[in-house]
Image (cartoon, rainbow, N blue to C red; front, side, top):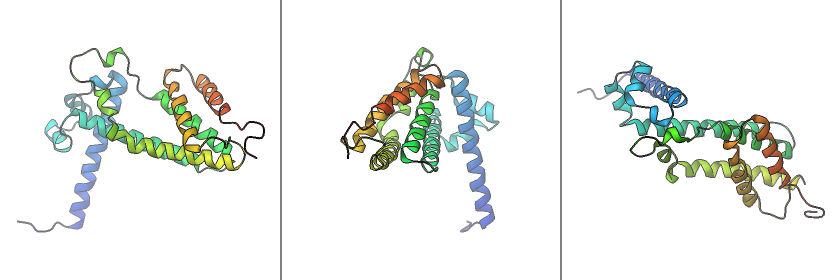
Length: 207
């Protein structure tokens, strides 16, 4: 029995695993965009990627596991995008505006859960993607990011300071969730403007 493998062999195996995983998640994303969550099957993923089903099952036990991994990759990517926007130059108020705008636009582009997602028997895959234990860590990171920006903007006098940043962050996130139902980027921008108006300091509120 081999007790060790050459470093290059290990790196090659790791690279192969990464390639299979990414190809699988890319295929799942494309199938979801074309057919909805229920349109994703292991057979269709195998056909799209050219990876044998037996190989796919070595990496993912079922299609739900694929969808969960894809969803996690999406959330991580969105948080990285928002963090990058947060770290750009500008006043705290400008950076808060930019992050809220980006969040709302991302939320608008998230997958609809229309009738075609629920027209078959069996468990709803969309529900599995939103299990509390899966999204709670990401939601906490998002909430902390927004609350931190609000605190900075409040210190600069751009945001009211008579309400705690954590509470204002909750308000913003709940308000901007409505972006998922809006028809255009312009409509989303109007929603962001209305949301920000609720953050403005009143006369003599902070100083």
